[in-house]
Length: 111
Image (tube, rainbow, N blue to C red):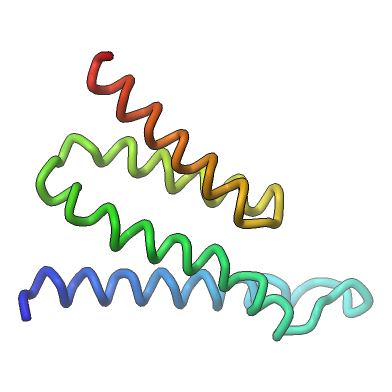
């Protein structure tokens, strides 16, 4: 097994874990009347964690070959995360992320 595969697996695993853990941790200070259960928050965060993990795995080979694609990939991730937390659904943010990645890549390639 290549060290690159091991590092990528550890990175994806850590990010996936944080997407599941942080919503639980950040929700602790809220009022108990408005507080959702830990299981509900965990299930809500699985969608974004899964999509981000898939994005990392699918974009890593491209980034290894083409280092200039780092900015479009980063833009795609930022759009995904921001739109997910704004809309609280995963379908539209995934499509917006793909669109923003494609537009950024097209604009950076000069055409």
